[in-house]
Length: 501
Image 1 (cartoon, rainbow, N blue to C red):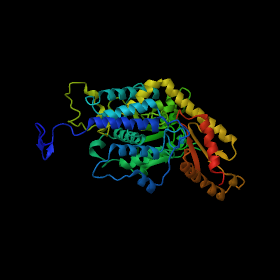
Image 2 (cartoon, rainbow, N blue to C red; image 1 turned 45 degrees about the vertical axis):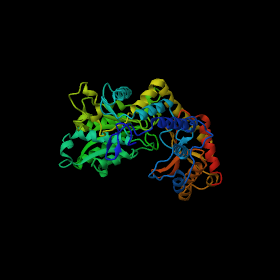
Image 3 (cartoon, one colour; image 1 turned 90 degrees about the vertical axis):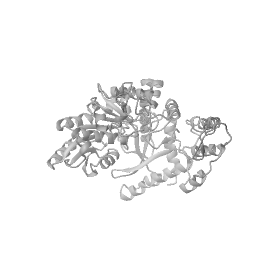
Image 4 (tube, helix red, strand yellow; image 1 turned 180 degrees about the horizontal axis):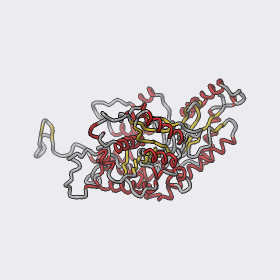
């Protein structure tokens, strides 16, 4: 190497030419993509495949060979690592993965992710991300239309939890703009309101922002999990009598466990009466806005000041794809979050710097998450997205009716969205008297069935206790790959796994 013509040596390092073997790298990418196609994409809708290949943590550590070494490994070993990662990961694309509020595979969104991973962009200025900034602008504009606002603003964030935190901070900034520069000292005791069924991110945001979790007043909900407006009014008045400063109400459109939708119109009335910012966490339920049949679930959402909406859930845009949408179009987002970094947001650039939207975000580097949603929307159209929502809710309704027919299955409540919550009561408990011992025994049933289904790999279904109720299953229908047969299988498999309990 030292004899190479015109070799330049600095600190013992030869600087001539690249040090990466591009041809070998391209070959590796081709071979890895083939594995992805064969082991992930082509098997995504195959119900004969396992949902998961369960291994205990210590065993899995040995299988994966997680240690990083001084010298690199050959490409064949790296490709085997790729195969192992795929094999032992949970197949969230599988039609019988019902465990979370996301599932399935959308091929257009997947290709969009391939493109953005290959291009490796960061969305903050037009000069480095022209296409993706324009895409985000177009997607936000369309989402705002579905909310029912004439104008608005927005930003895509890494998760609905972050969107909720953005909204909380934005509401506080609107209430007292001086906080951005002067901080928390000298402020009154700020109080916000959220339902008992709200997402836990509300508590985390209050903690993170220095508001304090004790200053989140949780509002009682009815038997369906909806916020009771009269209780909200009482708590707002209580806060004022205590000398506190109420500034925000967080309503929920699609709660995590029960899938409940708060009465937004009545909550908006109270917010208008008391001058409170209304934020709607529609991370889960927002996609019902796409459906002409089901958008009534979010009646009144147009009166919100801000909305969190995650297309990666019901619409399958791929994790993560989460927007915070704001009714204000005067630049409130930018005024709240801007730091005016001179090395990024120069005002004397040769193009329209209003397209440099990165200062609306607390992030610097930011992924082009809107592109996944855009490409999918372009491919399917609004009618295709609407069909996904309608079919998911129709399948949920089918499952509910089947549960009612089958001995041993018991609904918690009639769902209004895609969350179907139920108990399975094994034969040994069906004649037992309703009492503490019965519920104590029933509490143990769901965890045992869950363990068995995961070790078998046949499906994944979530369970939890909730508001004094013992462990029950929460089945969520999302993926367009899911069929009526999968709903039947779910109930059959639970019976099979629990036949000896």
